[in-house]
Length: 385
Image (tube, rainbow, N blue to C red):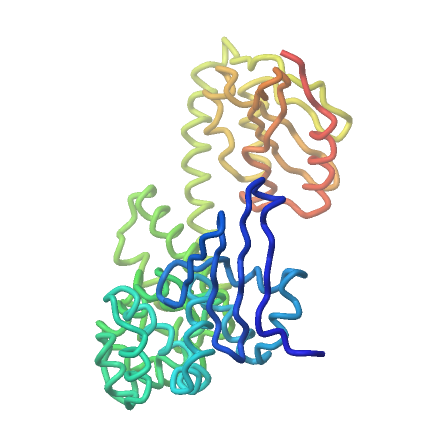
């Protein structure tokens, strides 16, 4: 395939005005120009806002131009999306920058963002690329020890952006050295630790395997919220997480607290039901008639019985169901569950049902089969206002 050193893209039909973009290729050092109304605007500065996102390199119109760029360069760049095109311009024109990027891509990215934020020139940046790693760590205000360098090299993320830069900075402000025993350090783990630094020496961290840190973060936050709602001792609840050895144990703790909350809620509403025994509370007529497998819940007593049977606290929505903000249904197949709906009115006056909650036993999400059946039924329901 012949090398494509310069690509012209005519945007005139799209913009309904004369506009041509010229991309200079990898071998000549990537830059770009825009020709509008006969005037040419040239762009050589890698630190300025990119012409297009990195995803555009996959576009068919750029295919021959992109194929001149080494594959390993493109694959590395994808994780640094917001800065990828500027970094590509830099490494295509400067050998020291290319070498540093291939050897220490995340450090290169942090240095590039530092240069961008502080108004460096391209020449100054390239000069810095030849410095040793300890000096570069100092330039971006990170510790320059060998341990810090090794940890930075182990940090992984689906993509790196402002948030990742911030949590990396925050991590190195703590006692980070213990993390070096790990083979990789996902950004989800860093986020969890920054929120729960007290767990760094816990059984949970010592025994942890896998990458489900986002689930761990969500479970720990839920436990904190539940402990507060149940008026439990905060320190005791946090110590229980500390002693867990895996995510399953943390989720079991969350489940047990959910059960306690459900029991409390059900007790409150059972007392309400007892007080209102002589005047049963009726709910407004549901908007959809239901089926053999999806049955409208038409009274407070029916909802309370449903909540007691499935051990959840959907009964806490009773006042909003009574005022017509929500509607509740029993789901009987393929598993027992409770459906809570709200109604959405479109601009053309058609009312569509939207799922607020769909829970089975112990407040757990329903199976894919149940969700599919309920969704299929809802897609058939609409009411003209």
